[in-house]
Length: 217
Image 1 (cartoon, helix red, strand yellow):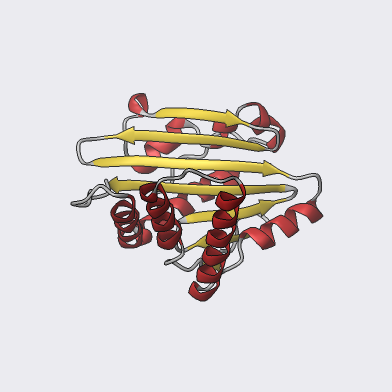
Image 2 (spheres, rainbow, N blue to C red; image 1 turned 90 degrees about the vertical axis):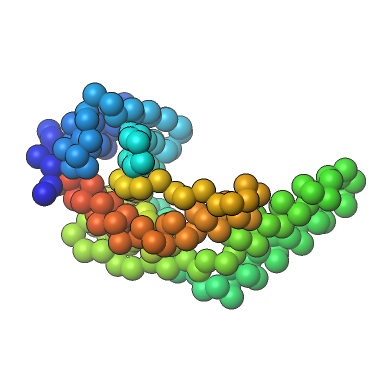
């Protein structure tokens, strides 16, 4: 069941208070959590507005995030949207990871870095783990002027006029912690958890997005 619609809101109003995009009462009703226990935090930057919502229970938790990036024109926003929502194959990810490694190695040599071997291994683990999962988007109808869903991260990226709006929502079991607490193990556990919970993430994110776009003027 969709939450009852809150009052209509426009981008100019959201620039002053981005959390008006996802009122606590709406989130509470949508995900069935106590409104009084919800914590919201806003962050304002030059062009980007962010509102995060969190709630924690015994074994379950709730997290939503809405980012609004306002561009100078619809044309620039359309170009930004196209570049942001491009699918990337595993092979392309591997090539990009190698380019990043080469740049980091060159920077270390230029700066005569004293980086330890353990720090280098951790760095390579992060890059390697991040390059294992391809980036895949699919089109979503009736969300702003155009929208695509990120099937690896569980985020909706939409364009409404000159604004790029990124929405993420998840309510459910917390990530099972791996036996080892090293970076590689944690990143692997996070990938597995996101994959296993992706059907719920997609449904919940699209539900939250629907309530937002119904109100956005």
